[in-house]
Image 1 (cartoon, rainbow, N blue to C red):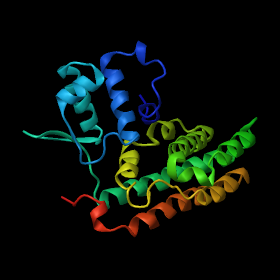
Image 2 (image 1 turned 60 degrees about the horizontal axis):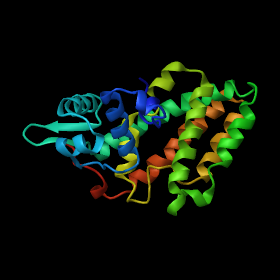
Image 3 (image 1 turned 180 degrees about the vertical axis):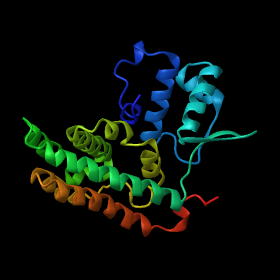
Length: 232
């Protein structure tokens, strides 16, 4: 299973087993903010929510703990992981490199049939008015489609496996009440990246991809300490 698969809708959920259905459903709930960083995950509540047994919930939580999505505290159960300022910085540092590599590969492959038109379409779907208010969920979907296409266009299978990581989505939800600093909600930031890829200049596209994440890092750096968990 890829990181990308973790966050996709389960179009064939009826054909999935209890573990897969619950795992994907819980990841989707985290992504949509129905479960938030720091929130305890109570097994009986999850059993009722997903209609599965305790053993399935235990298995799912152990899987999420091994991937850093939840923490399991003895005698207290599981809770959605909260990221410290240092951990958020570490996540963004990795994402900066990954998106740069994806943009480089996408620029190299931009002459592929239909690639230019598709990238333009995905960029145009990032409407300025959709980054706020009731239209924000539409922006989230458009943003994920945009990033996903760049990664796919790059042709790098490992990038498709690694990007996006679950920690990226936890970070976004955690910081959403602080001006959506980690949501890349400033749609103007996407124009530079799109044009750099369309230019076919691999080095320029990689630099634009890294700058794109750099804008988010700058906004996150300005947030107050209360936005983050304490460093252990």
